[in-house]
Amino acid sequence: MKTDLSVRIGSLHLKNPVMVASGTFGYAEEFKDFLDLRQLGAVVTKTVTLKPRSGNPSPRTCETPSGMLNSIGLENPGLEVFLKTKLPFAAKLGIPLIVSIASESDPQEFVELACRLERVKSVSALELNISCPNVKHAGAATALISQDPAATKAVVRSVRKVSTKTIITKLSPNVTDIVPIAQAAQAGGSDAIALINTLTGMCIDVRRRRSRIAMPVGGLSGPAVRPVAVRMVWEVYRKIKIPIIGMGGIIDTFSALEFLIAGAAAISVGTANFVDPAVSGRIIAGLKEYALENKIASVRSLTGSIVKPCVQPKK
Ligand code: SIN
Image (cartoon, rainbow, N blue to C red):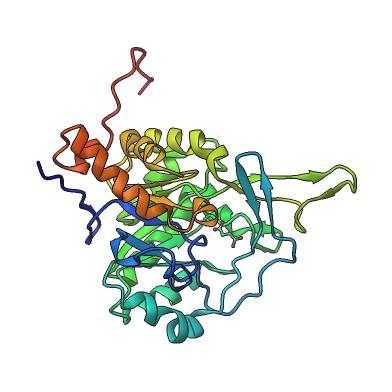
């Protein structure tokens, strides 16, 4: 029996549903010695802003129980240097290349970035990072965009007007109800939703009575957040029509399957790349094996295939 691992996200055709999450895989070249990058479903770059950013003060990461706290602050070389020095390698891989973009202060920067990238053929899709909890302007985190349905819809709509590329909107889990935010992104014209960015958290060194990272608050990722992420994918899947890319603590085939069964069309591997840079390749092989063992003709049939609970949630 043959099994089909391919999935569609907007106009993208992925040969399998395994992607790598923004900010955990550099610009792909950094991982070339660890796995055959061409086997990936797609690559998502580290977030790019219009101007270079040096990021937040160090220390910027620390380990937590089953996870990691980060406050990188969107360090990146800025669009110009990205296009000249980072993009060419990833563009040659022959797999869909998704560029993550963010504004630093004015949401209009999303439009300018989208306009500039519209002319770059090798870029298949834009991931709108409206959910980074670590960049503040005038005291407000840029993640605030994704905590407000109206602001989310406005940013997506403004990018949609200038871009013909597939648009993926990455949402924040730091909200009371994720569904209206996902619906707002869909209404604005997003082709897909990426769920979830990091959960805000703190870690304290009790001997020094200081935060273990330089910024008091950071974003928590890794297996510790997985149940939250799976729950959000499940909630959103039932209420929107566009595909979901699930992420948050995926470390192996079974954790990837949790997201697919909850409703994700594809998944992204994030923090696990820091532990095992070749893990995505193993997850692809594992999904194939699972599909064959369970006589699943297409991995697409797994999306949202969770058995209905005895107690139905309220509409
Ligand atoms: C960061 O650069 O601080 C993390 C990026 C993100 O969470 O979107």
